Amino acid sequence: MTKVGIDAINFYTSDFYLNLEELAKERGVDSDKFKIGIGQERMSFPSPDEDIVTMAANAAYPIVQNCDKSKISTIMLATETGVDQSKAASIFVHELLGMPSTTRAVELKQACYSGTAGVQMACALVERNPEEQVLLIMSDIAKYDLDSPGEPTQGCGAVAILISANPSILELSPKTGIHTESSHDFWRPNYRQTPVVDGKYSTLVYIKAAKKAFAQLTEKSGVAFDEIDNFCYHLPFSTMGVKAHLKVAKSAKTEKPKEELLKQLDPILIYNKEIGNSYTASIYIALCSLLDNSETDLTGQKVALFSFGSGCVGEFFYGTVVEGYKEKLHTEAHKAQLLNRTELSFSEYLRFYQFKLPQDGSTFQLEHETRGMFRLAEIKDHYRVYSKCER
Ligand code: CAA
Image (cartoon, rainbow, N blue to C red):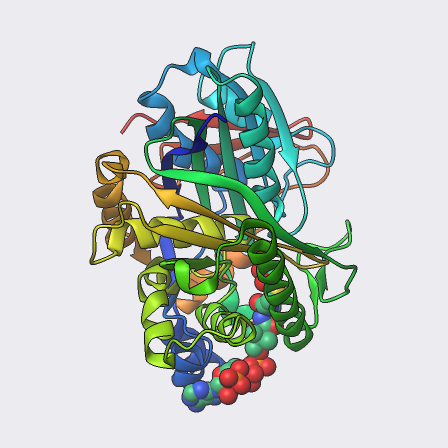
């Protein structure tokens, strides 16, 4: 069987962030609730001229620069925050990246989970034609109502992944565990910009799905909890991953002490605490965080990943880290991007939050605010005009 998995991975987030201490002050909340209770320190927030398309193109650009575009058979873009009810966001990205017309483009949806459906589909496509590659992008803006419990769990980001045969970073096992069950924990009717969410219930749905999916993964693969060196979780906020990990460990009957289990998660939380939730991208930003920040060489180690989308679908799958993986990472660029972001004041955050594009088809030029290479420049005749900026 062909070895298939992740050959390249890169993430992008907005250049702007709100410090959660500032949010706590404005909302009259003890800042430790955000820092310790939900485990978040800052949240990336997009400027009006950024959206899931610009973030996706920015995440994918360094990858396509370093590969043979003609080998990429498909671009899949997974998102909860689509910009059009009909046209796939991946077609905009296809154009911005200068992809050949022979590359197919499609958009995927299932709350925060769909990127992982994309991973499985991409692996199957590569298995069919091992000389081809699939560019998979997860891109989202997590936006909740102002002054709601979800407000401190906002964020935004995109991750681009190249799936190929004989991958350089993570070889993925075809054995996975899945839990699908209809639930109304978080959903977004077409007429709403923000989700309807029962936050407490959603954490219970998440944990149930994680335990069920892990049990099935073990049953199908024969791989036990203690044989897995690293765990990555979808992170709507950091303590969600921590709670789920302890519950999964308990139901898998490991004898590992709690301190060891908590330590296992340290490297995956680093970027999330800075960026916040990024829905589909979140679990893969956690993977970048692990690969970039782990103190040990991960070569040969197993990494299990739990992907979750409210509504709900959860999937636990795993891979093995490939020798030489560090050379393919974008560690310095990731760290530099987070370090060089601009802090928003609370009133600037509100301006970004409240900005609305015209909905009557009138022409509107956006102020240039992002420092990213790709930006939304104009709206006219009901369509979006993107531009590439020279740096
Ligand atoms: N110091 C330290 N800790 C404190 C504290 C303080 N001063 N004040 C409160 N805390 C702790 C609380 O004890 C609580 O801890 P536990 O969870 O261990 O009990 C934690 O901080 C949070 O406090 P609350 O439960 O009072 O918080 P809340 O009611 O304001 O809401 C939330 C928390 C439900 C997560 C809310 O932020 C929310 O609805 N978020 C959006 C939904 C979400 O992210 N759901 C997650 C699963 S769904 C999913 O994964 C899909 C997706 O991406 C959305």
